Amino acid sequence: MMNLKFDQNGLIPVIAQDYRTGEVRMFAWANEEAVKKTLETGYAHYYSRSRGSIWKKGETSGELQRVVEVRVDCDEDALIYMVYQEKDVACHTGERNCFFRDIWGEKANKVLPFEVLQRLQDVIKSRIEEKKEGSYTYSLFLQGEDRVLQKFGEEAVESLIALKNGDPESIKAELSDMLYHMLLALTIRGVDISQVLEELCSRFK
Amino acid sequence: MMNLKFDQNGLIPVIAQDYRTGEVRMFAWANEEAVKKTLETGYAHYYSRSRGSIWKKGETSGELQRVVEVRVDCDEDALIYMVYQEKDVACHTGERNCFFRDIWGEKANKVLPFEVLQRLQDVIKSRIEEKKEGSYTYSLFLQGEDRVLQKFGEEAVESLIALKNGDPESIKAELSDMLYHMLLALTIRGVDISQVLEELCSRFK
Image (cartoon, rainbow over all chains, first blue to last red; front, top):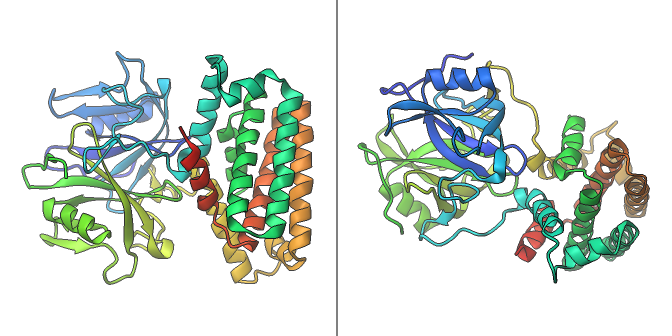
């Protein structure tokens, strides 16, 4: 591996970023041994400054982080672990990531553009698994695959008309409808949006 | 603002994350004054440990970071600045972000699922602006809006057929085609994919 610049305590800051959603799951520290264990095992290891020891994330909670890639910054003194987060929870508080508050201490609930397709499909999956009464998603799901595909087709046609007319507000609204129904159709077919996006990534030049 | 835990040097680690793509643009440090200046001005300020002073990102290069939101982690000892990156470049090396190498020192070129739609639309925009010869995007653009919309419609119908048939490989391929043509149609209409995704975010419950 590269020569990393560890600080006077032998540590380097690590950003754990979710490979699918892009959200920063947590921020922690690693020493050289923790980085090596991460590379050897494929699972995120850190160094606890309070306990003075290496820890494997999720060893007791099951909230393991499978590391797809480790990236290094230009100064070689900070890392990103690009992770699949098991159980979809990373914070010891039970929140999905550690950055759940804004600077005013308010809950930072806002879902951001880069994560919204994945997060929305995850909600769609849970509505169906929970058989959520009163949910639009679940009731459309119950009407069967042809009805879901028909809705996707309708919204694609409405998107086309909006794009032809050129009004930005209609374009945003109709494409949002189409994307939502696309996610529902994908869910019925057992395909994750990250798999579609990976296909697009593989074509990226 | 919240009571933050600054370290023994009065500093707190800051992750600058791109609001549109989700990529981590850079990792740096701030003191209390830098955080306050960031909040007051709406532009990212940091503290340089080597120079021993506050700096405004992009003050000389123009690579300013407009801060949409500041998030705080569970331990109150790390921040995220959620930023719009001006000039689309954050690293002093000229790279778009500082994490452009993997742990083996190789160029980390891989575009990741969460960022691919935005990154792809940015490429589409540049192909058109540069009037790139031999580019599929530019040649389709030259054929006019009706042809672009027709292609989007065709790919939507092919997506529908693939979803009906259920083969995951065809679904991924056809939806990728559709999403690409959707991005081209959006570009012609001057709508950014982040605006469509923001519309989806605003509906998120």
